[in-house]
Length: 199
Image 1 (cartoon, one colour):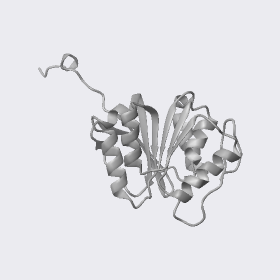
Image 2: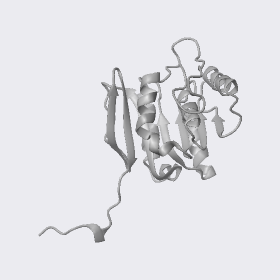
Image 3: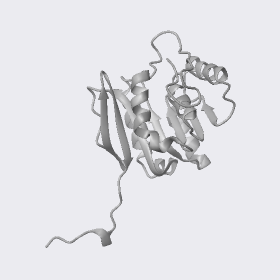
Image 4: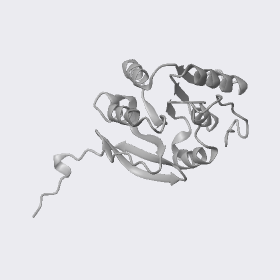
């Protein structure tokens, strides 16, 4: 596993032993960042269920202003610290060692907002996808999203996520082998003045 592009290009990253943490593959990570490339420079990036931190570190390498790494598992959080230290990254990030639901509540209370949210729960944890996406699509969760923010969920390609979660609606799905990326954005609000009456 390595950094694909940017300041830390080709630098290796460590991963925890065993199968408890499933890092996003280099190929899928490259696909993700090719799609969001116009948004990365200077963005605020929220890496939920961060695992090794590879996705968030890739964002930093490509010019993200700040990355929040959210990871509840202590071994994985230790690897994130190791990877950041090996690259001598000392600022521009926050490591939240807590459940994603608790981290989202904390970020909401602090009044912070992200331009890109990436979530990659364990594939079998369907409730985590639903809980996180529904929160982000709720009135409270929307305050975490900057204007024109994009939310990206990695999941099994054979498992379809819902088209909508509150005010979040899916805009694109990219499948790559057993994995897929679903892209969500806030639903456009149509005012009464914009509506055209039926003849």
